[in-house]
Image (cartoon, rainbow, N blue to C red; front, top):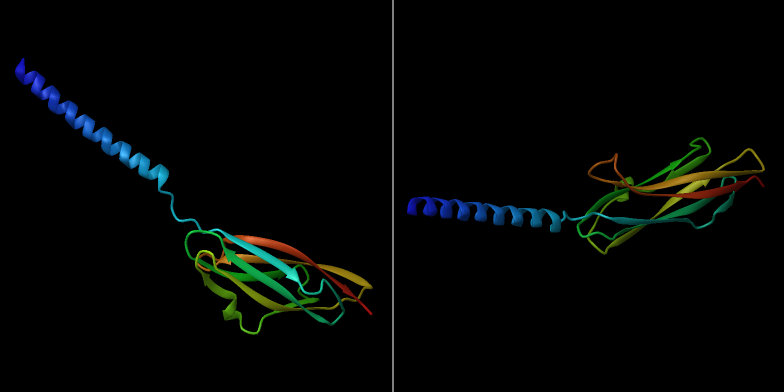
Length: 149
């Protein structure tokens, strides 16, 4: 009978240790979240209305509001590539790395033409991941009005 209780005691201690280890692992999984990369993007046009053939600036600002570094890239798309031209003097400078709390601003040239009296062009500015170009971290739309005068 004494051997039975000693074996049972050892088994209970073993099970207790396993339960404590399991509880520690579960708590670690629940409370230790991976570092998040979060960002904010602000976009505005210096002049939202221009004459056909004129140029304005699209001002893009990215802010790293996360807890780890952000490797990003600015990207701008237009619905009408024939009439809207978005450019930046050095495309390499559209890539950046931001530490938590840091921000970066870039001014891109936007020129547009129209054959109508007035045309509204939608520009979509995106902050994409430099590590995974298919991952959009933030996106904003602005409207550029072009008048023929």
